[in-house]
Image 1 (tube, rainbow, N blue to C red):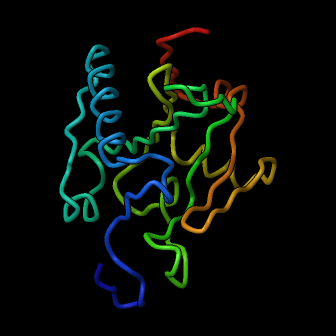
Image 2 (cartoon, helix red, strand yellow):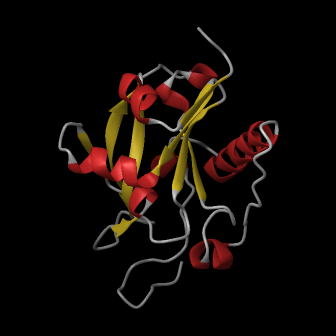
Length: 170
């Protein structure tokens, strides 16, 4: 990986240590496809952008949706349910980078909506609502070597989301 002007390693690390998945890029891409198919059933069509260059310049898609896979929130694919969403606020592409950069709900791109969930269901939020919730100080913060964020209980996700999609009730 090459270093950027701030000495931060550029490029995205998709190893299991960072994400919890052996093939996290493919896992994320599959979930984005799933979300696009489900939204299309509601006549919401997303045009995803896949290249790093245009994702950094524009965002994940032309419509301004950020999509995050969270297997553990409801216990999808054999994971133990946490009953909370893990909302991303900052990241490092490598634990050796000196500082975190804004990501997730603070990423400066075209996204104004934030989708998070898994194949059991997902929530759509306005990014500004998630930022307000984060700034409220009511939620547990999290930090691992490459990621910062906060935990939003499912009960609050249901309350503050713009729309919820449910596929598999337990």
